[in-house]
Image 1: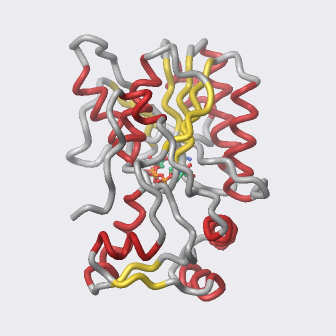
Image 2: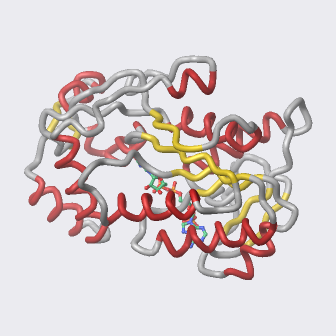
Length: 266
Ligand SMILES: NC(=O)c1ccc[n+]([C@@H]2O[C@H](COP(=O)([O-])OP(=O)(O)OC[C@H]3O[C@@H](n4cnc5c(N)ncnc54)[C@H](OP(=O)(O)O)[C@@H]3O)[C@@H](O)[C@H]2O)c1
């Protein structure tokens, strides 16, 4: 499991740990570049390494059947995830479940371009793969905890709706993709409702603020966000405002046999 210290990685590890030893139980090896924080879900084994370090990936992939692949949205994500895919291929890993995002026409560079390039690499791989293409995680609003506590939420997306998804649903689908053989290819994952910024504010019981995108970019870069990621986000928000992430799908229900969770309900 790559990304075991991250939000989705922890959630997937937790689901697999609950199955460990029981029917469908699996042995989990975490690949981490820093120790698992206290309170992390239990795993069977830890390999310390880095996606930059191909030797550490080779060690991590030995005798592995399935790889969970998630990494941070960085400029070098294609190189890093390709290192992981090549290590998996060399070790004879059967399947890879990769966290990607929803393709949007016209977004072929930046963060979206990176995910599309990794998806193309996986399509040409000897490993079978599931491409998890989730909408916005509802947990991104948690990063605005202080703002929400003061009665507001910032969503610079105009009247565009987003089919927000609870990350625990993404993790549940990923955990299934690692042990099932019927989930090859892209899975467009959404929550049950498409909500615009005002709807989100109403569910949270706070005022929604819709900043102009140049002002939003200036603010987040000043607080430390990588300008490359800020630019990718600006292009994404422009697409959201045009309705690019408003579609809901039945994929979560089809895979898990239950509807996706409702989001932003307090
Ligand atoms: N947030 C959304 O709404 C959304 C929507 C659609 C798709 N996505 C996609 O979801 C993915 C996860 O994003 P996130 O920011 O939420 O991730 P995250 O929870 O921060 O997890 C990223 C994981 O990757 C690990 N990692 C990063 N670089 C590494 C390296 N060089 N070597 C080893 N491990 C490395 C991190 O380890 P450390 O703990 O050591 O940093 C962490 O465990 C991204 O690809 C993003 O594009 C996000």
